[in-house]
Image (cartoon, rainbow, N blue to C red; front, top):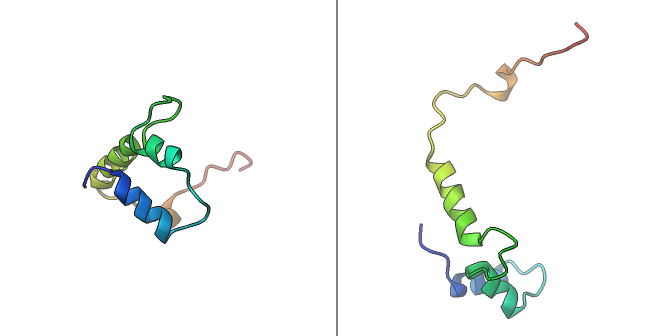
Length: 71
């Protein structure tokens, strides 16, 4: 995965426009300065680690048994 950059985000805001983005908002996603939220790149890195993590054998959801306290 490539490192997030400003041009990528600008392209996304044009292609997936749901509302307009201020330049400051895009800058904050690329290189956070406020420290209030996790940086977007950090989030992408964590998602990439999760994506690469093998789950081994995971049963389908229908195979999960529900615990019913009333029975």
